[in-house]
Length: 216
Image 1 (cartoon, rainbow, N blue to C red):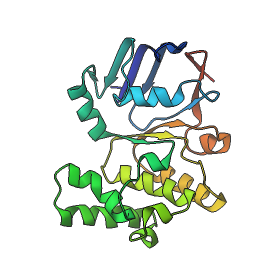
Image 2: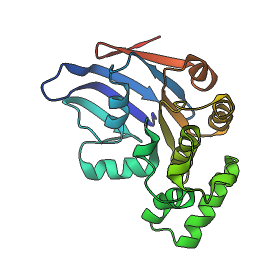
Image 3: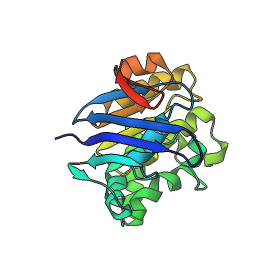
């Protein structure tokens, strides 16, 4: 069974040319798949459709074996599929790193002690404990990218959607992110302009051009 399956997805923004035309893809357990394409091709749009932040004009979104159409369907999807946004500042909004990472588990009903234990576990696994009590908006761009990943992993997702995760990363943090992602058990759908990163973590690719997905 595919974890994520898109069949004949079409989408366009109001008064604009279609962004996706009859787009289809499948992501199974343990799969690593990259989506390539020019700026504005619709790659980020594709990820947002999967988690229900946008609604397709046509086609079927099937996640964990069930067709997803309405907001209640996608509430479950967003609990089980983690999306790391292209802009870290869209995802980090609490005063400190620990509070940002604890936010998701608390929202799922975990106690404060349980949430803080998750914070420490995730930061330890990612070798980021040094950032635990830092003020989030004082972090470097690369540090923010790694913390956004930590906030998503704190939710124990079954699938990871990564949107340009190497933005703002220096060489050391780039290498660390490759190490982290390759050690994760989750299936990964990656959007990235970075060919070296794609080759390192998700070499199988589909290319998005003029609204259509095709194997590379």
